[in-house]
Amino acid sequence: MSKGRFFFFLWIFFLFLLQNSVNYIFPGNTPPFLLMGVIFYALQEGPLFGMALGACAGMLLEVFTTGALGYQMAVFASCGGLSGFIASKIFRESILVQVFLPSTMLYFMTLFNFLIFKAQTGGIEGIFALSAAFRPWELLATALVSPAVFSFLRKVSPRSISR
Image (tube, rainbow, N blue to C red; front, side, top):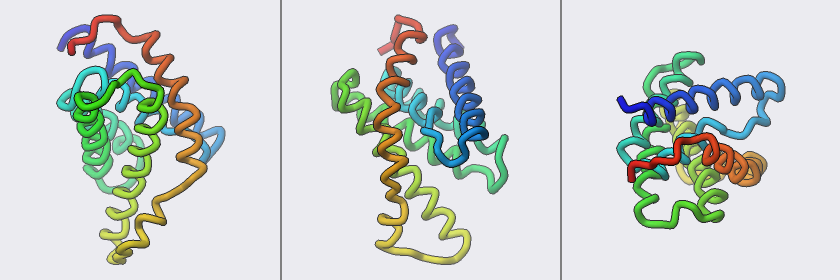
């Protein structure tokens, strides 16, 4: 593994620790720093690296939380891979991407987690799952915080990008 890629994994671990620390102080009001980091590096490096980084981030969440293993890895890996794929179709330095993509991925991540939970408990929601996963305050907080997180990650990341 190159030095730059190891650096990316190190920053994802730092964002994980930051998110858990802030969530401990302010429970339920924490922006998804880990998801923003996965999206940022997936936009920079592409879909395969985004999937690998998302799987690593999901593994961190699964190791330090309770519940069944594998779901968070799959959800974060799909968000990272999809963000990396979107990077080839859009201008990845745009402020609109920095605001809307993390919010959109947070909505889809919440929807996938909700559907997985309902499938485990035996309840099927149907169309109501779309409205149950919509949490406007979390989406707004993500949209407001993500440009600052992207700016911070751009400053601390190595300048040489492989793409």
